[in-house]
Length: 422
Image 1 (cartoon, rainbow, N blue to C red):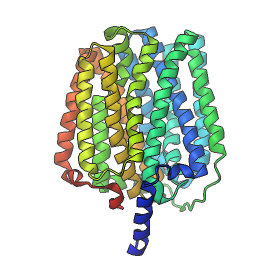
Image 2: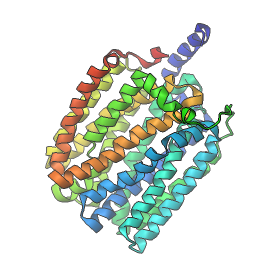
Image 3: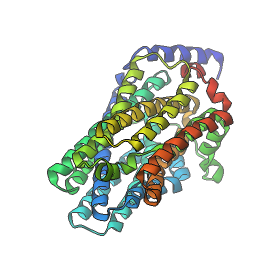
Image 4: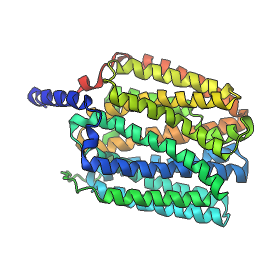
């Protein structure tokens, strides 16, 4: 790209950053974002219901870890395929078909819950949910960045984080209240299906996007193009690797049903509060990041935010008071929000459009692995050594990961304002 093209892009980016609503001024992006909020809200409600129902039926921390494992395995197995499909097919259609599959999965979970079907059927349904999300994530992410100009990417990354966190605040709270209201998880699964169907209609209203798909024969090289791009871009690799191992080790969310019932001695409503607490902190931080000027030293901010995440995770693991546990979870969400915005912005401003689907697929595997495999790791460690050891040890491991990342990729310590990285 010539310097004559780079200069307007740089100025347009700066202008967008001075407008907190730059991305939201585009109709299709608004529809997409509203749909995602609804879909994520239903998904968060379903997650709370799954954790509550499985722990009630099995009283096993390992069963909770299996929730994440069942959903992440298809995403890992299908990574190269789903990314390639997102770059070579109609992204809107893929997104819509994936949402319909999520509707089917939620309704199936409702039937299994109502008739008290075997637990293995729940995990089978979660595997199918993982397949739907494996296609939805790269296609949806790639579609989203087609709805706005490059100048609004930084603002959109923050709004994307904010919308997810808003859903993550509303969803767990509604999930906890719904379980208490219905006295079971069946009604929650039905609400999740309605949410996915609503997102389907909102996404269907988005105008068709012009795409120039290159006709390339399917080969290992084209399938792995996204992975090759990430590997060759050391800053992107460092950022998503840091997030992968930090959340893999430091994530305590999967064990919240155990902490709520056995350590803090509270019920499903309080569990909903605990589930929502990280997202409350993340939402507050994301809102601040929308209005504040761009972070001038993105690299140090990324590293120190993850160190802070590890510290508050340790305190949460040692806490025996609900108020302190809630506070630490709020802080963990706020600190995690900083790393999410930095990582998403960094990935998007450095990725060409023809690779967005494949890079999004790779990124989604890192995210899913950190969240879902982190839940399995937490469940396994808790089953072997107890939940407190699992969480505290994970927090210590998170801090060590930051030190290792700063040593392996020293250039991340020097990363400045992201809009200047264009």
